[in-house]
Image 1 (cartoon, helix red, strand yellow):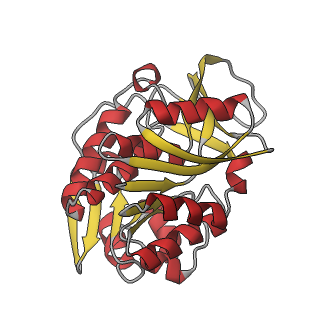
Image 2 (tube, one colour):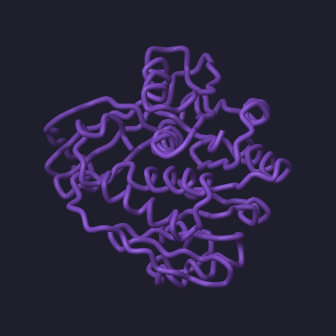
Length: 286
């Protein structure tokens, strides 16, 4: 097994609309669709386009859970999911014509993924790279990191959405994958700081770091050096899931032996490709 993604899976409820409502205002949406999503599942589906991939997560015993497991299978990712008597997670997404989005996540069953389930799955799968994010419990993330530490696997941490993290956990990340705002939150510095300086500063916390900058590409900090990796130009139609496509592709490229810089270049190309696709062209949120 190349990659195991330990993370969340949600049924995405996506509404396209001309503009976001002001507080207390009602606006009409233009279209509505439900799709497989969640940061973990999105990253697993992206990784599966590159190498052998498994997804470790949790869904409810409901129709939405069946939809998500089937979507993972159809994308080529092996699904190692626990099923619990809690509704499957949901994400409510608004997308405007400029391609930007806002997202509200209700974790649901994702919160029930525990350390024991993560450890059992990784013991069975024996991946060379484990990727995780922060839409699941701290115990589940900790279990993934500790398993990598014991097994000598590479730990890729996409520290999103932002939360307080113990220093030892960040120190295991190779790389820590964040956008500029998330990097600033981890460092306790100005969110408008230069991404290259943020990436350099993160080397004091993690083994390596990648700071994404949207259309501006990404900044790779490794071995005391910072490299800029440009993103191919793209006309954004929907930025939802672009960061997940980036992280999943990067994890898979690293599992196949890519250097961090070349893996980041492949990841940036995939993210640029994704933002140029419509929802129907994607088939899911990544």
